[in-house]
Length: 356
Image 1 (cartoon, helix red, strand yellow):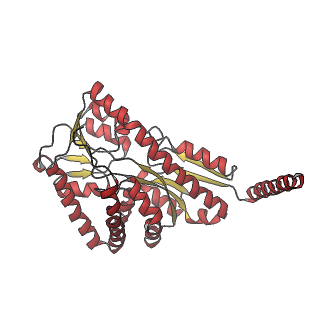
Image 2: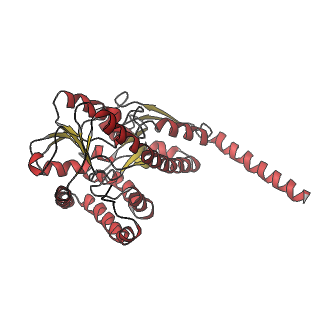
Image 3: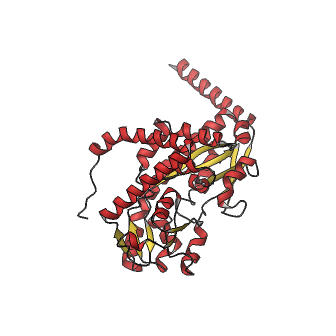
């Protein structure tokens, strides 16, 4: 027994020594990462410092992240190009921010009418999602490695100054709207613009836009939309779940050791769990405060309006597929996965309680 214990101790000592030796020999990497979202925003931003600390600790200091608030180093909408060109070697972003350059990138951000978070992650990690995600950037000529690092809960459908009773109330509206959902709203007569978070409140206040969506209740509360517009619509049909991405310049990625690459993959996956759990924990309080203290009126779209949004989205998806073979390939793969998943979703989960 004594010999067995001694052998175990010696073996552990050798493993630890080898681990520290490998880490000491690894090249030290500093990732200078501009952000899409400010660290003052719940989940979207304030989890970044935590993620950076974990990567530094887990790598024994061989990988450090130095992050920059939106616009301080690179404008939010230019992060992909900056990382690809090597202007910066990493960046935190959102696929839909690049849809003007890569239409199919929006499919790796948020999809109208789902998938929700669990289904999205199922397709990503157990379907062809992650493979298609990287392939998309490679085929579009961007020199980046993509690592999903967050998934967030459903968003609200928007903030309006008056009730939207039918399609006619949308026509001519000037609204900040995100991603593929924005294309749906455009088809319904809305003048859509995609403003970064820091510009939305001022645009609302000055009448540059009449309405806006941005994120889930706890973030919208932080941005103060309730001070200008009081009608908050649910559900967020356009963003039932939203993926966020860490982009790393390919040369930087290829210069890392296999253990450093594996570490980044593991820690970013862990952060996905953190962000989803965090999102789910903080929404109820924000909604309650809006109603009780801020005069916000929570509205739920009628069945007729939801049906209109859905049929319009189907038109948009068909048009996008006709215009882009890459979009079509990804959309068809996701749709096939969802069709099979539907057998489980339709039987395994409770329906929405309409009496609440």
